Image (cartoon, rainbow, N blue to C red; front, side, top):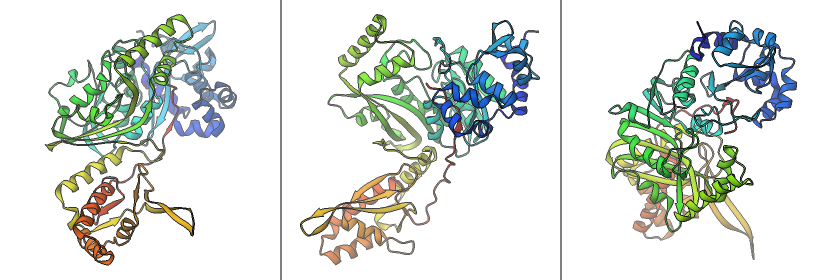
Length: 511
């Protein structure tokens, strides 16, 4: 019987376990320098370091470098899977007498629940490769960003829309009772099934467009790395092109996701939106949400100008804009942006929670660097929003979050140093910072678990400085709402989500 990709997964898994083809072992065996070179798609340092690693080195050169491998070496590294069966299953391909080469990408990933192996198409980063129209992307920077941005609080059911290679689905299996993945691509269905089988995970995979395969169903969590590229509404590669004009794919996801959530369920997705001249991007994205039933936290991580955006995505599909065909494609794309008055393209995370209340939307920039995974921060954000709905800040006793720090910036003045800026920093999570004044700093200094409610503190501060108490209370309440939304102050006794581990170990692809 001819071997198939799914039928050989148990033997592949046995080989990988026997030779420690896992994320931690790769880092330890290759060393920091060679592992970093692997991340930069520089094969030579990895090839040199792998030569002393026996069968593990063969697996590294086979699946991560796409080197030509002698039959006898491949047979030893893949045993108990035979070379002939690996070729029949399209894991390997014959490239010459006694030589084989990987036909698919299989790489280890540890996103916090131990090593998972992810099966995808070769991306050409180590050996030139034509990117097919139904190319299935592997562990790229976008998928890693979504992994780090996804809450991992336990839930019963997860839906992965546009599952691709299944990387988000296998990650979800670590915190969910059951996982469902959808994708329009038959190729994705095959490789996602192989990813699940290789990891001995039970994932429900349904072929179809967007939410169509799960019509009428609801889930506790939705994750999505959809084809969000902002383009002309055409499809050249299914992993990135939706066939919907401009940012219509992101709009579709944001509009429809909440209807597939249970009450209290959450969604996280990567999305893009255009910045139109004379229009606030926050208003544009907020307009895609209903007036009732959704809490939304929209976080913009980057904004690209049209020329940079087009050039980046053309390089992604290996199109040279110096050639006549590439130049024509780039020109058409830029002209389309110009006709739509597009000044830039934003990119970031969209977090949604289904409620039975009036919709609340916070859309904001988060373009500075931060180290902690953002996922569980979204759960805490929604918890803080719930608290604000149910309580009056003036009646609450607040305390500073342990990570909150006060900073004063001094500049030279006529009589010595003069305070120019006073701000508070949050030293974890998104690393938020807020500029305040000296009265605000004094008010924050008076916070303690056994202290007074905010209203009483403001009354004392107003009396001490001869200020109008009502006006000071209004400004202090607004300040504390902002600081509480961002987790710099919190009501005494309010719990927070246990932080995620920050260590991701992965060998990523370029795209």
